[in-house]
Length: 107
Image (cartoon, rainbow, N blue to C red; front, side, top):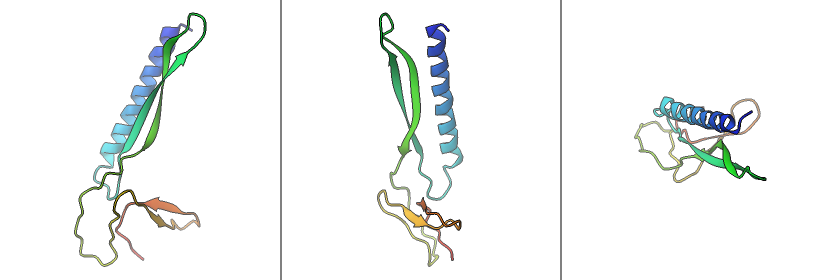
């Protein structure tokens, strides 16, 4: 297949991944403890005789934005807030361990 088609497909795939990440970040913006995903795009270069061109772009979720959000006073005794990039370890009920920044705890 023509090299330009692969470049176009790669660009479209990276653009779709970026749109999915932005949609997820917008949909969860009001979720307590949510941290926005951060995406990294890496160009992939083909090497060889006559092929040293940027051919593709690899997109991956690089992590989460861990900047602190606004503190909300709830008045509930079990509510907590994490400082910095701390995460709270919780038991989701299936015997595994999960991590969250959501601080509205219940027993």
